[in-house]
Length: 232
Image 1 (cartoon, one colour):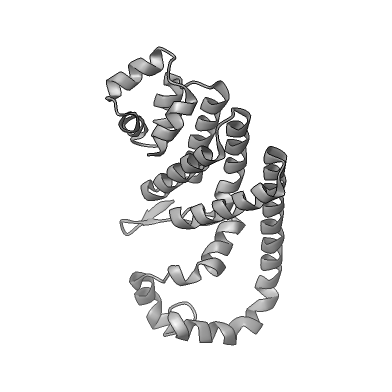
Image 2: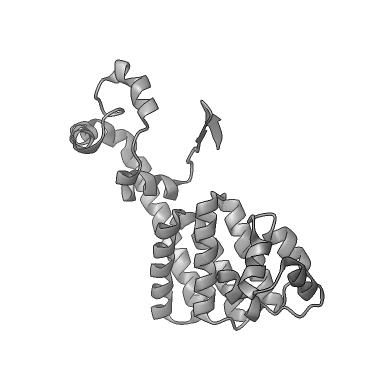
């Protein structure tokens, strides 16, 4: 991520994200007026500057030329996405021992990714780890999904990186495994990655931040009580 003419610019390198941008959600990402203006004198209303139906028509005309170049890329991309989905299904089946639940969780992850604006591929591994931790800790599936959806939607609205989002979910997975919330996890692992985590937790529990810190320091804030509050 960088800035260009004081505007944020994000470079995409992950195959699954490129597939989402160029194929699944192509209609949602238009060329900026600045880019069109810069390239218009050079390319006119060509493939790199046009939009909508004109772009689709030119894309169809140019496809045979680009096919030998991009064909191998998309073939590799399809294999990568397929492996990712297979790994996710295997992980869900290993955790829940139920193919129906695994399919349900795949649909849930796709829906949550679309709603939060976060790429499916960047969430799948973190979701498997998080699900394994909460299942082992006896956290109900509904609570697990509510918490995951809340975190990923907040991550999307805050513009968090994949690393920050995954780190937040891993921290919550640690809390589930331990059964109680520690101050290190609340202030550092969660607070440093997700701005406002401390105040959100206090608000969900209906107490002040100072009261929350005292509760955590006493070792009496259980994960089963913390998770629903943090999801609100």
